[in-house]
Image (cartoon, rainbow, N blue to C red):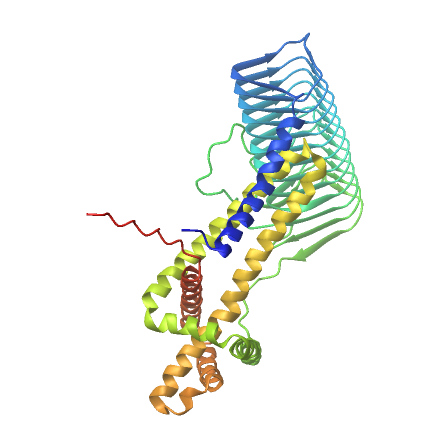
Length: 475
């Protein structure tokens, strides 16, 4: 039996879409013929060795002690860079140590990250513990549980840091500004420009070259619950803001706190000291007028959409309602399945797009951003379609079904008008969903039932292949 033409067209479309995703992989294989790929338990690039091409290395222990002319990508349990990289490095592992020279950017992720060498570009690092004890000639952007700038740390430009604890030792230097978000902060080094950020507790015993603007939290030290033990100790910092005798601020000090800062007599602040109280945040309940206005907006929006659907697509709209009315439990169950499928598909599209983008950016860079755009637009279309159906079409279907049932019980003659049934059901639905707590649960049920009806409608309209009739056997 021949496959029907719509089914054949569907297969062609699916094959074409699949080729769009597979083609970049095939093209990139041809484009990355020159890079070196090294795998093994232990990978060593000797001190006298020179690698002219991009290096991709994966293994348990990776030691890079030679000269690498192009980008380096390395992932392993222990990664140590003691040589020279003329371009960017991308390192991931349990323990990452940079003792050599990176003439580009260093992008690093690991449990313990230590920089003792030089990075001439940016340092971007995320890990449980990040230790900077070398030179960074551009910006530093780090995040982790424990962040430490040791005495030999020298950063030419700005630092952005986020973590449970941040400490800069007395001989460390930040040439630009420090922007931080931290639970416990100890600033003992020199920051040539501004300090801006927030902390649970902050102690300044170093020098700030310009203004310092911070917000400090509670009056008792804060410790994160269930935090894993870090490779480096966090500073012991008192709650609130503290300026020790060696603290120097060459500009203005502005801080937000629940209590005055603890400023020692020997501390020096060249500008004014301004304390701004922390506002007491309390969740505000919407007024009755706002609630009524919001529900009227919803009534008008869903009403217009519903009237349009009943005018242009009456059979489809009433068919969805009939599907829910005949099998409500089944529709609810398929609604849950539909929600899960949409979530999985969205994550899959995002993951595939990201992988393709990363692969292409280093191989066929001209295709990288078009692929990223196609993936983003596909995900956007999926989310907009899902959101539009859940917020607009599902209430239309339920209102049409509920209004028809209600009018049939009260006045059967009025139930024949689909517009009257829909508007009566919509008014009732808006009133019920406006009830606190009950309204939220009811809205979720409406969405899931509507999605289930859509799933059943889609499944029933998929082209079916019928098995060929068996030839009759001659007796």
